[in-house]
Amino acid sequence: MQQGSLPLRTRVRSTAYLFVICLLVWLGLTSSLQPQEVLVGVGISVVLPLWLGPHYSQLGLPALGLKRLLFFFIYLLVLGFEVVTANLDVAYRVLHPAMPIRPGVVVIRTHLTSDIARMVLANSITLTPGTFTLDVVGDRLLIHWINVRTEDLAEASRLIGERFERYLRVIFE
Image 1 (cartoon, rainbow, N blue to C red):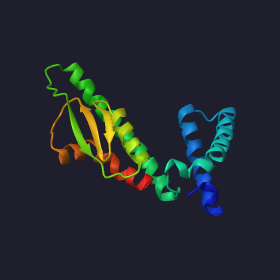
Image 2: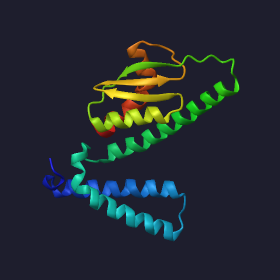
Image 3: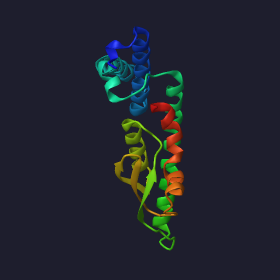
């Protein structure tokens, strides 16, 4: 379905939500509330949704809503927490060479169905130190893991991907 064929109310709402997301990302990246920074951020946040709007549905993204927006921000907090704790774990392993590591490659299964949701999951796993997504084929992800705790598909999926999937499912599907 093309963006132009969506009802006007849905297009306006999606554009408004994209504006809010862009502005918050801008403010987060600049870490500044200086008037000129905010003004540039508002300008970019107005132009991007208007420019991307006609292509929004082609990306395979669902219509934005408050629930998805809320889960997006919760997801960012969860991702940030996982990145910090994984960084501490990897740093501890580096500083304590006697601590065992069992590097290896495992396969995990995802229940996400959209390509963009799987892409975000794969990138989230890669952003988390100690794990690296090597390939995505269908519902399987090939992951290099710094300390393989299990080779069981279900358990590895739970340990690596589940913490992200529950939020991505609401955001993208």
